[in-house]
Length: 131
Image 1: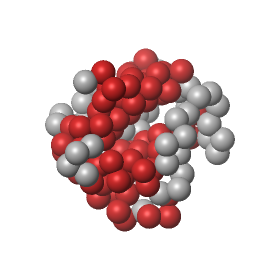
Image 2 (image 1 turned 135 degrees about the horizontal axis):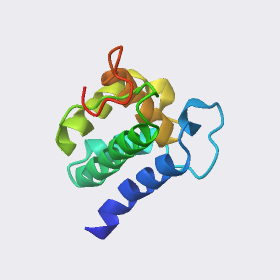
Image 3 (image 1 turned 90 degrees about the vertical axis):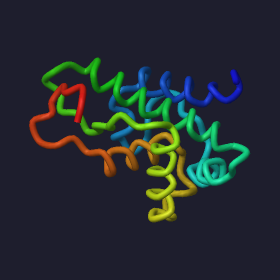
Image 4 (image 1 turned 45 degrees about the horizontal axis):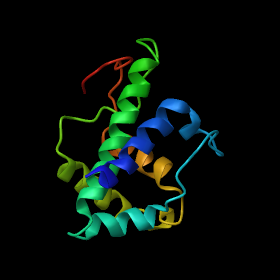
């Protein structure tokens, strides 16, 4: 159980330690150098799906925490609906399958982009806690 939560915890720490780093060409701070293609493989295997769920949920939680901490005047980029780990995993797998050119990139920024494109906040959602 602990081993499956480590990637999720790392994602939360990554996003909390470096708000705004995802939008840069070269992120500042620590990033897990797991490639997006490896995450896709983990997500598509029944044996490692729980690891994928934890990782994607951790990134989703981290995005929400960082965007909420940024305050009410900062426009949110991601408004993830209440969803299970399985639903988030399915969303990320579908997005990665359509963006195979991104599979060799570090997973954190790629999953952030997948979430931002799939669950964008609508105009006027600055600081919103729900979509």
